[in-house]
Length: 312
Image (tube, rainbow, N blue to C red; front, side):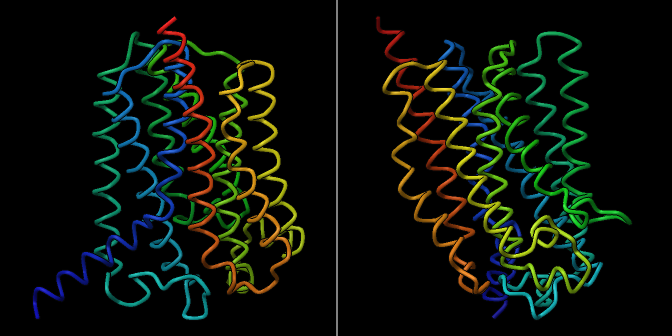
């Protein structure tokens, strides 16, 4: 009996970490590393700690989201999404807060090792230490605090920044120690796909969020415009990848991401036509995997080009 109880508790903590959203962390770090490899720079240990730190930050954000929503009474039994562990009483608020603190310290520790492995100058240490602290603060204050920015419709901007621009460009810089303006295109593309995952979540919970005063961007736009916005996110991401491949890569292998296009179109049409929020429940995991697939194919093209150029 005790064993079953412990197993159930463990599963509830895993569910609270929301593993379906974790591919977003992998996608941004994989893209940044592929760009670095294409430019003949690679450090697999730095890649691993970039990935670990980003995954921990994602889990921290998920823990904080559940804790903050619980404190504000936003996650009620009426929500369409899966019931959180704290909602079911399987995890107490005190335990979740402790878990949140532990994951925050784990993120700091992992980030410190990452900086130790990758820094080249005092400026590197200062800038990335500040960015790391900012990422932790942003993860927590999404729903926690007196004025959580997730309740003001700024969550999409945060995801674009941390799981796109900073995730891709940061992992690229820590391996190459240089920045090029052109990598902003795939960085923005990765961020737009990550924002689409958040938007699915917000479209699904739109009515319940509105009722409790959680004014996400989907709530502010409304259901119809929110669905149009979702399609624009995906189209803009593909446009960024396409422009980058045409102008910068200029090789057929650089267009492997196109193979994800049918899935993106099918997903977009479903979301655009679907007015029943219940039908959007499986779309979050689907969008997360499509984002990973698209970034993975784009990265595979760059890894392939890097290998080809090394063998020439």
